[in-house]
Length: 409
Image (cartoon, rainbow, N blue to C red; front, top):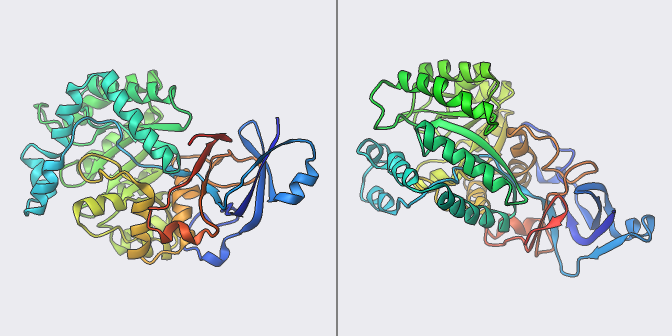
């Protein structure tokens, strides 16, 4: 059954914008007094409220009575939401001079979260995950990528991926699972890093594929993770099995992103240490560069060179990296607003990076834009101009979020 939703002071559909390169705010289409006709979770038509009400006389009307700006729902294309425990003590240590990698090497860091996550049962992990998903939805996120990577053995990696699968049946938003068993080598694995990756190839990935727990594989290429050479062998085999590829690269030192270019990875994420040369390769490739300002805030390190990435003509998305070690805030809009200020981005570039460009990083072409045929994944902010959204630096939250046309909060 069709329904008419509106009027909104402004609708910012974000359609007609380029997938790659810089964007200017004057390129944004703004529909004043806007409305949408919805049917079965999708947008049928978008335009002026009064004109659509006359055109679709007799259909159900859901009137919006407060001032509001409607934009597409956010898509968080890089998170680590399944974990247990806190690492607040490590934040205190870092402020006393300890380095993140130093803490990892001494038995803290990722390994600390692995131990806590292994000790939590599936039901406990599910409860914690659902709380985090609910928070994300309240803040306008309607599609969430979620990685494993805090299990680091067959039993616990499967436990994490099955937790994501269970959660997907309990929530209306879309969850996209990614197998990140190659997060780091676990301290209780006695072989080499190469042998650990071979173990994953033989013992874990076939089960993940057979049970359809994930169709994406990720690996951390950097200090504390795996070398480009080790990653290349692992990812080549995963790709041969049918998995699409995404990678963590260039967070602490450059050198990992070129593996993604060669394998035609769907995305290369982090990029804080990316060189000018690699930015050029990124722009020439079909990869999406996913920047993670939450990790820079959490670690007190420079942001990824977002301005240069866009100016060189690359496709750039923005994600939260929500995790317990380096990005515990988990507020995508605050993080993007800080990046907006420090990297001198346009509002159009930030909103594109949170919506249709982030959708592209996950292989979706049915969301991130408000246009006929697209999913009615949307959020309304209590303001009269789209410029207010980033101006308030993440403290202005949507008052209503819709997933496939159904109100969530």
